[in-house]
Image (cartoon, rainbow, N blue to C red; front, side, top):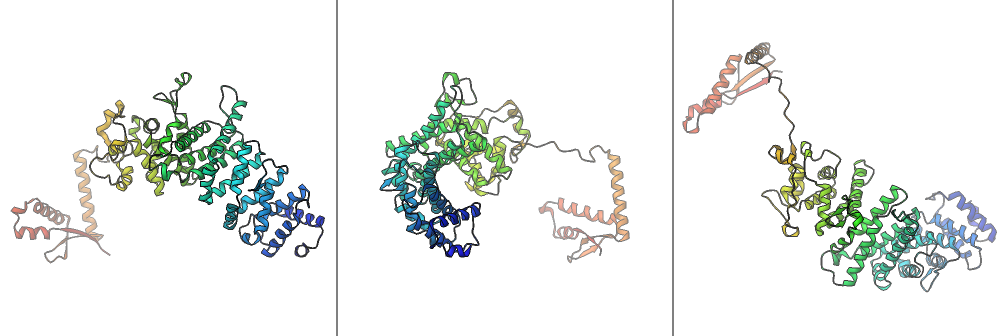
Length: 570
């Protein structure tokens, strides 16, 4: 093989293609190349692009060369050394993404796909490539292709266009602003999502929900990730201050409305559906508080009977899906099948929504903190309801998870300390109350932020048992177990006491134990019998019963002398 690398510049085109094909077949499942040093990789890459002149190779030959190059882009080490402009520019041309000449209708589809796979690997792996493609206008070209084709492109080309756009917008803030403002990228991405849902809606039955294909879900996830990048710096304006431009506010409200429709769609399997919901929720965390009303729609006449999703004339199905997703994430986290950090976005979103929208908060409270009934017989951490799971997380070793779960429950209680303690107990809430400086007198930190309408509707069971609830644990303490001497008569107790006295005297006589009292000099004085031990204890008790005003110096000295210790002989 070493000789083959040395002959790369001298062999014929057919021999070169045969070499490249064998290299690909041998390494198609490899992600590192320990037997291939940097010099050999440089020779192969250089020769590929030397021979990839326009018109020199047919489509299939170009494809195998690009596939071999893709293998080499999997390994980070030495990547910058083999990817100069002589490699990056031809890749951009083969992908149809030259800024001055965007190929909106590629003919060599498979070669475009392979070139984009190489580009996405290189952008992900190399800061130098990120900088090159940021300057060379790749993001602008992709936006132009999206604008002119929307969903008409080959599905794989659409996918990798969006993958590259996601990577570039994640790594370069300037590109985000240019795509958002100069090219109106948000509008085009909204349109793509709408078209995908519309296409699937026409295939669905009139009375059934939209079902997305796996291909649709994968593409939508890349779009949602890109939208996250394009909106991630908007909270600097919209979360803290009033939106200054009505057009921008309307844009984001439209996005939230689209995300609501997307939440109601189904995937072909639960894993894909939860993955899609995860990225929708991530994107919603970037939205300003004024936009969350778009997640709610007025209830239609035929929906009014569905009480699970209806609240005060609003359809809350999207909020219910977010709560179900929270439950799913908690289950995965408790089974140790998911990172604890995976829970943070959905907790953060629910906190923001419940703080900003009264209807959302009251609906979430109804599902997470319903009126307490028989639940008071168990600890707040016992059970599989959302209240129990969130309360368990309040004592998590993960500080962020602990804070977010406690904050959500606190917000559902309208940031009322007594109400939080009612549902979780002081023991579980102590960490949050300490962090917020709320230990002490009753507090209601943001009283003006919430409606004054009372939401307490305690059950009869709770009202009857309120005096027996332990505020520390948040539940009724179980009855104490009967002691072993509870059913003994007084005569039985006296007999047992005498047995104990005899056993103590026997132990003292044998030398197993040696009781002692403290003498005036502070040193222990041995006690020879149980009777003497008893007299010393009674003397001490009598001295302790005296009031300070009645105690003389001698009595205090005598009290000090009556202190008893028991030592074990060696």
